[in-house]
Image (cartoon, rainbow, N blue to C red; front, side, top):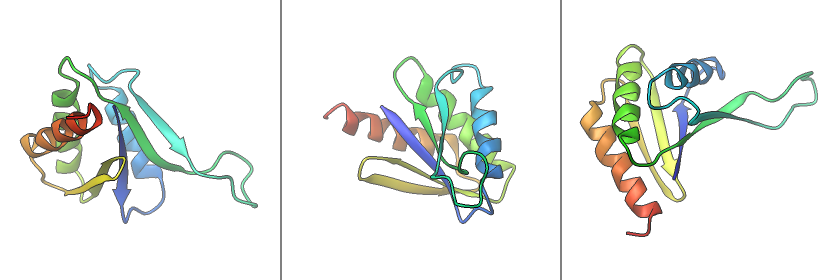
Length: 115
């Protein structure tokens, strides 16, 4: 399953890029995080801005690592993240504890696995 992670009401994509770097550096998430860029605007010379992060979530503790990393990142910023998979979406504000994130990510994985 891949979880889509976005920032809600963020100024530009730099915070999302920072989050992507933070997650990519976490043991257990190396190689599982990728940035998805938007369409290139007429005035842009390079690729579009980062719109979301895709995180490959499987078994083996990946959800726990992701939950703890997201909670730590949210604890150091005044940001809200949106996590989605298909039609299932939820938002988590700064200060969200890792257990809440882990429950939601397990629910997403269960839905993606068909049960």
